[in-house]
Image 1 (cartoon, rainbow, N blue to C red):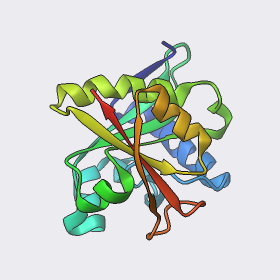
Image 2 (cartoon, helix red, strand yellow):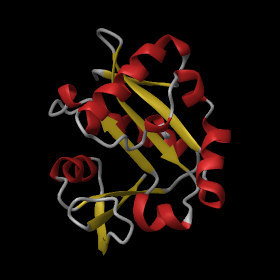
Image 3 (cartoon, rainbow, N blue to C red):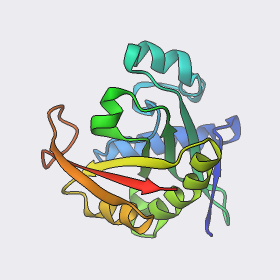
Length: 175
C-alpha cells in the first residue's frame, strides 16, 4: 500500500489548503472534502460539525473525514469522507462516501486505494453495505467503485445539477 488514511490534524494544514487551491484552479469539484471549497483556513475547515450543520440544516449528517497521505513522502494526495447515516438527499444523489484526488496524482490507483482503506472503517462503524454515486460520464469513478465491489443498482436523472452527464449511477458495496 502506498497510502495511509489519517484524520485531519494541524500538521497537514498547509497541504490541505494547497489541495483546495489546486483543485479549484483546475475547475474540479471538491467531492468528499467536507465543504473545503467554502472556507478560508484549515482551522475554519476542521470545525466540521457546526459549520456543516449550519450549511445543510436538517439534511446534515455526521461524517468521518480522512486525508489520504502517501506513505513514502507524507504528501496529501486525496481527501475522502464517509457520511452516516444517509439523509434522504444522500440516499438519492450522493451516497455514503465522497472523495477527491489531486489532478497530478490521478491515474495512479489512489482513488481505489483510498476507498479500499475506508471500507473496513465503515464496517467497524456498523455498516453492512455502502452506497456510492457517480456521474454516468465519470468512467474513472465508476471503475474505482466497481474495483472495490460496487454493484450498479440503478441510474437516476440528476434533478439537482451534480453531474455533467445529467445521470447519476448508484452503486452498493456489501461489506
